[in-house]
Image 1 (cartoon, helix red, strand yellow):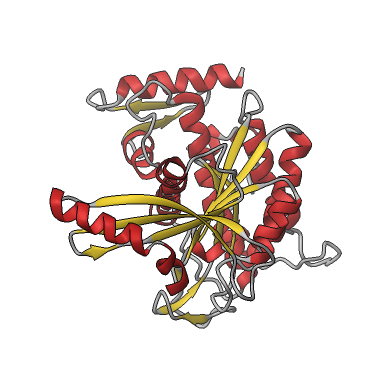
Image 2: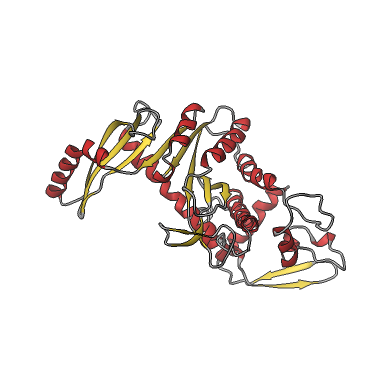
Length: 364
């Protein structure tokens, strides 16, 4: 079936399978970095793989957008052996890798496997600089915003953004100085919550600079919130001016939408098995992560091209696999054709037919 849909059956030789088997993929995982090894017929162009995700993202947009928001996040990829790059991570309380993901909405731009003995933001500046250069080469006038939690609130990344016309909205870890700056607002929120019996929040803007790590003062938006369980202050730092985006909108509409990226990571790891990094070397596991990431990109393209207007338009990768791709069918192979008979009781038969029609039109 895979050979049929990928057009590989016509090129099939009697002594060779239409698609690569597990042994071939294993040789690709462990191929050397150089192409001059006479005993190796397979090699991996890592730079080309890295460029592929950004180029597919750019080609998938019908017109250049006015603004894009790039979401950055690191997550844990548990490992259960003596793999290269194996380290214990105190936050996740286990041995794991710490991959870096960059998304633009649902579109995946980067999936980089890293050991867990580093800061969450390690290497993020270089990756963002590379991605921003690729995007601006294609869309010169696009505005680029970065959005991430407090793990990426680092001087190196913020200073680079300020020097390269890239705006950012990052979470900022709270501390006694920041909490003192909104003490009155916290007290007011507590009083309102007591009167209303519901959570209350008040927003305040600050000009803030750390004593050592930051090179300059920056705009900080504080959320002075009081919940049933007690005070819940939160802070974000941004390069956006107050004239362009007010504090409440910046926090509630822009920054809080960052949580949607967590769902994209779950799709990659839970639905498409991006966490099956059990090879011995970090490089081989990076290739496995890329394979899962390419599967995610394919399903995202399927959603964009063929699922709009259907009941699966906003479905997760797991739901699309379960309801649209994992169908029981009777496959009959004859000399002239391959016949695929899907059960007439298939609940999404009409969607399947519509998707097939749209894909044929897109490929024409």
